[in-house]
Length: 335
Ligand code: NAD
Ligand code: WQD
Image 1 (cartoon, rainbow, N blue to C red):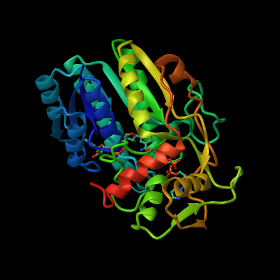
Image 2 (image 1 turned 60 degrees about the vertical axis):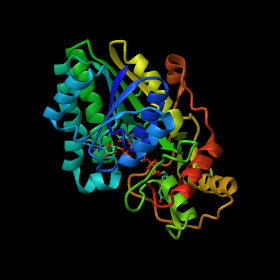
Image 3 (image 1 turned 90 degrees about the vertical axis):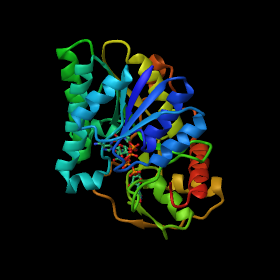
C-alpha cells in the first residue's frame, strides 16, 4: 500500500515508517521538522534497506497536501503530526488547537478531495480524563481532559466520528496510546526530545548518560503501592507494529477505537530501579512535589486490540529499558 505518514520524522512515526517499509509498503513522509529529524529518516532508510519519499512541509498546508496526494497515489494515511507537550499546551493553547485540530481538519479535507478514506490517528489515553475507572476500556466515554493537549485529542476523535457518520466511506482507527518508551533494538533511532524532557524515560536516560544531574520524582504520597504514580509503559516497536495491524483494519468502514498499552502498571520508582538494574548505571533522583494534572495510576485494558487486531505488547520492561539505553548511550546528544 502507498501510505502517507504525517509526523514520520518524529519518535513514534519514525518507528512506524520502519515497520511499514519492512512490511513492503511504500511510504511518503510529511513532516515540518518542528520536533522531528531528517536524520531519523535517513537511518530508517538504511535500517530498512529501502528508500522513502520525504516532504518537509506542514500538514495545515492544503495546496501541499493536494500535490502529495496527486503525485503519489496515496491509499491510506497514518497521522502522527502534532504537538504533544502537556505543559506547553497550557501556555499556548491556540498553537495546540491550530496544529492538532486544524491540522487534522485540513488533512481530512485533502483526503476527501483525493478520494482517500483510510486513516489511522494517534490518539491518547488522556482522552479518558480524570476520574475514569481503571483499567481504561474503550467502551468508557471520553472524560474531561486536564489540559489543551488532551482536549485537542478528544476534539479530533469527535471530529473524525462526525465525519464518518456524514460519509460512511471513511475508515478511521483511533489508537489510544498509553506511555510509549524504548527505541529500535539497533540503537539507531529513538526518542530525541528538544530541551528539557517532559517525560519520565528520556529524563532518566539523560541522567544516566550524564546530561542531567538528577531525576525529580513528582510526588511520593500517591495512593499507590510505593507512593509514586503508576503508568502503563509499552515498547515503541510494539506500538509501531500495532499501527500496521490497524492499517489493515482501516480497510473496513467505521470508527475503530483501540487502546495500545501493555495492560500492566509500573511505578516511577520501579522504573528507576529497573533502569539501574538493567543498565548497571546509577540514576540519581530526589523526591519533589506533585506535578499539576498527574493522575495517581492508570493502565489499559488491552483486550480489544488483542481480540480484534491480534496485537499484544510483547516486549517487557527490561527490554524497553535496554533498548532505550542502547539508543541513548550510542547517541548521547540525540541525532
Ligand atoms: P514527536 O514530536 O516526536 O513527533 C511528531 C512529529 O510531527 C514531529 O516530527 C514533528 O516535527 C511533526 N509535526 C508537528 N506538527 C506538524 C505539522 N503541523 N505538520 C507537519 N509535521 C508536524 O511525537 P511522538 O511522540 O512521535 O508522537 C506522535 C503522535 O502520537 C503525536 O500526535 C502525539 O500527540 C501522539 N501521542 C504520543 C504519545 C507519547 O507519549 N509520545 C502518547 C500518546 C499520543
Ligand atoms: C510518567 C510519570 C510523572 C517526569 C504524558 C502525557 C500523555 C501522553 C504520554 C502524549 C508521571 C513522572 C515524569 C519526571 C517524574 N502523551 N515523572 N519526573 O504524564 O503519564 O503522560 O505522556 O503525547 O498524554 O500526559 O507521562 O512520562 O510525563 O510521566 O516523576 O521528570 O513519571 O509524574 O507519574 P504521563 P510522563
